[in-house]
Image (cartoon, rainbow over all chains, first blue to last red; front, side, top):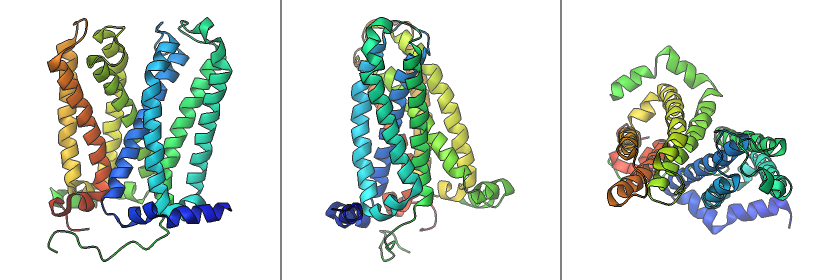
Length: 179
Length: 167
């Protein structure tokens, strides 16, 4: 199955159709997406700042990262689900949108950065777990992480200003107040 | 208020913001980043009170770690929000979501600073009152974030309660 066919399939799906026709679904889905992104960014930042030695305390890196782990992943799952619900009703346009493509690439880069940290840098964590200022590899990963997540949020906001719609905006909707 | 908003929308500074193609998305992105800082800083303080995080340190330590970030990010959030309002005064003034959001921000700021002052110096875990307050503060901030996004969809969300002309 080709990529355009998959995108078309997502666009034609029942959930996409429902999102296109529901008046109230989009604001709630978007709000949940903002909330989830806020938690993902904020909680990752707490860990990144600890890795950068800000503040310069001796709270173990393992403790800081462990207590943020569930919060980050829980919020990330919500962000992916709500993001998919925003993508589906407008899939063809999103897929062709440059800001959207860069956002996906930046997310991928953030993921790779996290995996490299997890499977390479963090293996020696026992040696610097209590250091106020972890080694340069850890600090580099933290800086990269902050920059990439800020970029994800900027690109995400840019999508909304560049995407347009690939369906007719409904005009025959009756609001429940007298005209 | 709607008349004032209409007039504000015609002032040179508002027109300048409206006609810029990059200023609004830039300010909105910064606004969202600051929401992340404010919400998570508040959340860590609230979770400490609820006994769900950082129970190995005192309330004061958690407060001193997160409150400065929370207040500074809140300041940047308010400043970016202020410029965004000037750029779209009529849409904001006509949105019930906007006025509810402003009221809840006032409640949230007073509650968080009240919680910080009340619990300062207290050690150990907290019971009923502080826990209920912490939970309420989390719920208020979630409501603020929802209302913020709902401003753009005020008619869809509130129907006849929308304050401006039907859009």
